[in-house]
Length: 355
Length: 260
Image 1 (cartoon, one colour):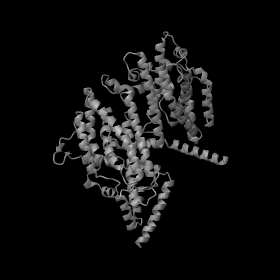
Image 2 (tube, chains in turn brown, orange):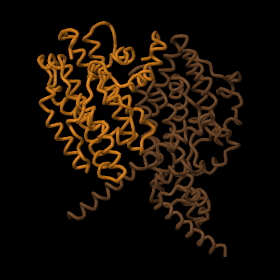
Image 3 (cartoon, chains in turn blue, orange):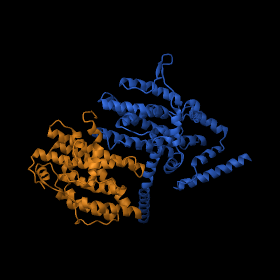
Image 4 (cartoon, one colour):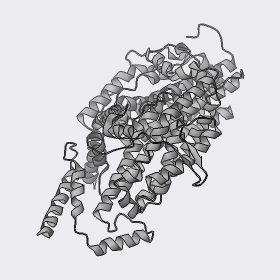
């Protein structure tokens, strides 16, 4: 009886998914709901065991390989969040392109923001191998519940913020993405590998500029310290909740979508950044930072998790503005996308006529 | 137009380089406003790429002008420490970015003009200058192809896109006359073997524009309508001042700081 229900349900979910594919209507029901329910697909224990064996042997899973539905969902969830983050991430830094203080810095910043658009593109393409469309994923974050990294809901108040973002935020992203480059899903791993190369360059440029500001005029020093003070805790939050409070982690680790826990990665990052901050004479705003001789790690104070959850829920300084701004770009561009489609149709038609 | 004084060869060369550079900086700055706000992700990349090319090119032209000037200044001096009336870019380049059709129409008009201009300049006697132009000629060709493709797509796309594209060209038309403005600076550079003979390709350029608009099912506005003049000698719309205020404020607030 139950078995029949599953089959029936699954067919229904498949039907629904097809409707979503062919429709651009953003008011469709939340796709997450359908995806979650479709986890009830009949997957035999044998299939699951074989899949786990492949993962454990370090095999890469490719788009046409069999995979548990839940694995597929997790890759889509995580990968598209990652892609959305790249796109929204263009806004806080893009905020300083027009005001960058030298032509060289303007070019560096413009190239960096352009790279982020490129990263978004790699990631969306990687996720599309799982049979979802980019337009659908974009609708989910513009009009649905899909998340992006909360760090981008903080404002960039000075040019130094952009440099500190390069150093800290890209630095943290690299720690994450270097690990994700070994993720079990082939296309996602390869996208991350490419991203890492460019991201390392961004981090290097950011740190160089931070160093320059830190030894610059009093105004430059004040600017860069203020940026560090404001971005330090939000950067640590980028690694996600503590392991004890991270509901998706166990499954992601089991399937080697992720290879390290949030806390492990965060610790790795802190250990490195403390030294980098010292090297340029900047103060990290945490009185509890101290080196533990026994563990060989830097201990740090309690992360302000209340703030984290507030921003996740939409109450950061820039949450509303970011979404508003992305929606505006998307909606203002609708006529362009329609025109491009209409033109392509006309061209195809005349080509068919000709042949 | 040259009512003030005869310019020396050196002064003409600097003025010529600044005109080329100002066009590209100001247009690049406008183009960069799209970054993160494009109609589709691929276009975010393409528009940012064009902005990068234009500003990068401006930067090397300014640096060369500073080198010739030999007063210990650099490319940033020209970009950050001059006022509206000292800029000699075309008004075409400073107009607000408008909608995507406006951005594309302007880019097409500018890139097609640059294409012919650069074809001549890359043969300049001054090898350093010619090398710089040659390097960027490849980018100009890409900008022309990209903007021309979009003129066709939007012109021959939907009713709405056709209307927007037509409106854009209609609005921009009176700023095209200045593309072919010629004064003593141009004549001096041409005589020195380092200038482009604008009149030599005017008809060819007009034909390219007309053919493209026609293929895009757009009507060609009247070439004989009133045309703006004056930007090569410092006359601008009020839009430029606001753009410069934004572009220059940080650098000017801390003139002694090192930002490179």
